[in-house]
Image (cartoon, rainbow, N blue to C red; front, side, top):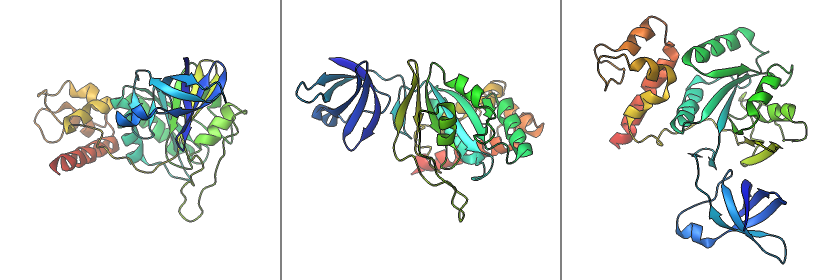
Length: 291
């Protein structure tokens, strides 16, 4: 059998990148019976059909990780792209995306795009998330700012570009590799939000050891992938770091006595907006468990 990696899946067909090129494959019916679905990013073994050169996926090799949205596997890092304007940056969604990738223990870089449109606001966001412990890059597909830094981040990784529609994910990828020719869209004049141009998850090969996923944009994300609200504190970097100094090991950093996190929020060491999102997410999780 031939080994390869699924780079695209559309309408029941899976396109597998192998040493012999891209091979169009179907999946064995056995996967449906076992409630297992092949995902983009899966490493698979396929059986070739000598008549037409197509293939059948016979085996899905063990996954290192799996994201729920978008549904992909074996990612080594996430590039979360947000724009400072058109559409305006949404910290609520950014923090939810960070929780998702932190849970899967995936390396993450935050990319603040269109930074030339609001320089001071971009500086503020960069400082907040850099202080929280994140790698963060300012970029502009228009001016070229940060493109080389971003290109270096992608080297020797299987990276996913995630974020809302219209923030410029596809434009950045086209700047990084001019051979990709990924379709880009315009911002709706009425809503100031992006229009969906990426309609499916697709893995693009940059070089022998570098792949990148451009995923459909989205504006919301449920937190029901967390099993218990106490997990949340571990997925906010700064809260996880300073929470170890709290009086009680079980501290959720809400109204417990001797809470170091609350003290640092009051002192301005932990950003108040990030902390507010943490509290809102915590309440949301409690309501999910209640019902």
